[in-house]
Length: 528
Image (cartoon, rainbow, N blue to C red; front, side, top):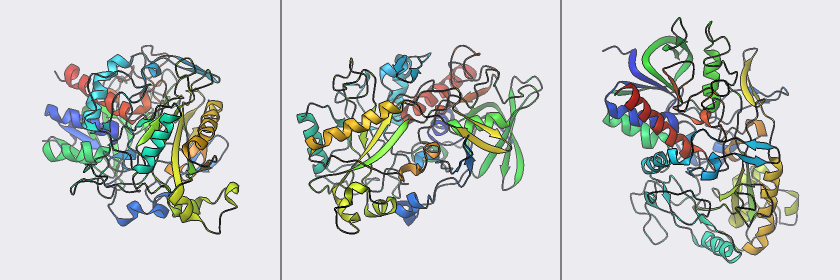
């Protein structure tokens, strides 16, 4: 058996690559998963706020550049499981309306070439694979579904239940956040003895020391390797470039650097799932005579139309103590659509999504510093603030702009970003602030700038998408409707690169669903 030849090579082991590997391994074909990182170490520092956030212990040690010449460290994580090792595990379906054109003050969120009905069965499969906990029917913007969530919603603790009740009394529609949280509750406010996930603060943005997060390593990679001898994982292996045949119509091999030595691996099918930014970079550095501007880049769109959501994490101070241990259980979509569809939104344009995040601790607050409006508190009141904190994540849609792109220049990675739709995001924040008096919370919001490594806007690469968009017209897209490149017949993509737009909810479930769809296409149409 040739250890350098496979039926399929999957590059990247995050939610997209991991899900594709999970599905394709069941065909019995020889599958190689190539991951540039190693397993994230299980160590005490997994739950150390200073190590995870202030020191960015698990963040990629790279320097990228913006168009202004600003140097920054991108918020990427190179491990088995990819960025899902530190994600918040909020697993949403895009709303049905997100697949259609939506107008914003700054421009248009474009229509998808495939609509929600095509993705619905794959969303259900993704929810079952990642064991999503949720409750159908609570969220008025929720798209239709043929089946319930596979697991019951993670329950609210007392202060969050009161917040939910207060929201309902004020006329809003809070709902239980759909979570990839491997938590087995005991029905009495605790967890069962063998529950992988505990009710504890370090979850959102932290690696899971107890393997209690439904990440791609725990759900896809490790089970696949344990049960399918035809699947192999190659770690600490960087794919330097993909090579085509002389005609440029097929990928024939991948050049892979392992401990400074180059090896060549061959396959019938190649699936790129490095994350939207890194996948585009791989296409660009694989340029050759037949593809002088990068693989499959006749349209000039490889690396362009980058999106990453307008995300803000804010802390509010509850008037009564908030003793919650696991806070990330509640969300609100009353402002997701414009006024005509979301009557609680007073503006004609969509504002976005609100959810709770992991609870602040005193160390985070001390590192970030106190805002001016807290000057009246006693000296060093960090633990006091943490005890009273309620922490929100705000998401508004980011529009795909051609000039927003990742590319190489003078041997360096450059990421250009012009922010869009910020007025909607500002209004979402102000809307939340205006609601706080009704919720037993002081009417002030304090930015949590360390969360997910978002030290500067361009460096906050969470929710990356759009750099290899899919579509029917090769002039206006890089991938076809099966997420295979228009120009290269055995090159597929299985991460968020394919998104034409991003909506305003976390993209991971859509990545998983589409990766399962792509894998099924390969299995049924190529290997039948």
